[in-house]
Image (cartoon, one colour):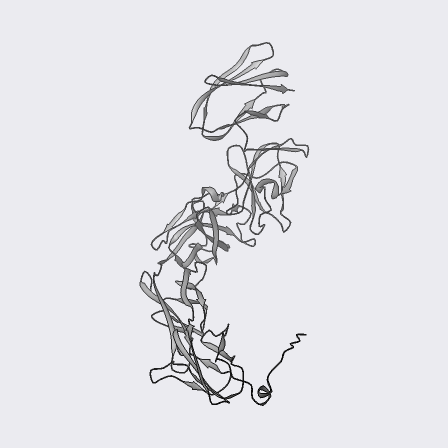
Length: 473
């Protein structure tokens, strides 16, 4: 509580003397052209007269003590307050009121490349300040009161001008407008398709082969493979994608489970490979109707008695999306022995596998694969080794009975290296020159003609030698 103590003259009880005129004001935070005025003049006052000087005819007026006024535009205004005091004294004060409604207009846009309607763009406004409405002008359409929107253009490879206008309404007759123009060029779209072959025969052409297939279209976005579209087909064995964005793509197709040839032919990419990293990259810069695919066929019937099972994670190395994930089993001649789609848990099983070495690989488009060198010994046992080995050579299995596999990585261009197999008594049993291709190399060591015991395997690469002891039993 504030207590004021003082003395006044007897005349002050009859009439308090009026001091100099004064006023204050506050600009509305949500509408910065609206100002609330407060009279600060003390004493007996008969009348107030405000002149806001906000139009050429002399201004608008108010006789309220504390008026609220709407100014018609940005600028400086000389607001005049005239006071008639009770002692018939006229008082006057003028203050400059600065009105500024900030408004900066900007917008961005990008092509929605996943939209099935060609040349659909996404527009996002970036407006700073105060505004009451927006107007998008796309040349062929006007959209109002949308901060963000989409628009599809009917013409390909055409230039358009887009504008965004933001409006702030001062009053019924005055509006602040800010407009920004930007140009864009629509993209081109093309068709792509091709026929599917079983060896030299066409699927369902000229007669039905009882097969249905599905094709997957992926766009190559830098280091990413973006799923774009899928297409089920059967008629004449021809897959088709209509009006796709001009870009780079890879395409994969596979038979559906109820197809007659489902068990015999694996999912395959354009380029006739089961590995997305080796797929042919298609530059879709014009209509392409002969991107044909020859499905990879199983090389032989399995005659073994071992069931080989595992999990996708062991090959892919990450918890990849399991939908459409395929595991492939290859022999050492790189012929496909079998393939399996994994189940919902990422598991696979190859039945009736025979004894020997295999390469186990998988395909989830866009996910790197680490193939496995696998050995099945015929006793329900199998061992794995990653093919992403270092520069040191390895022999697998070791010990071995009839043969083993020498594996090594050559990080440089193809070149010749020397291989020696030496018995325990030092006698050179085999000396051979091998071509080491760039990347992973595998060489089968046949051991049937060697005595049981320790065998020395020596790899000579220029001045570098690698010696491995192999137990032959």
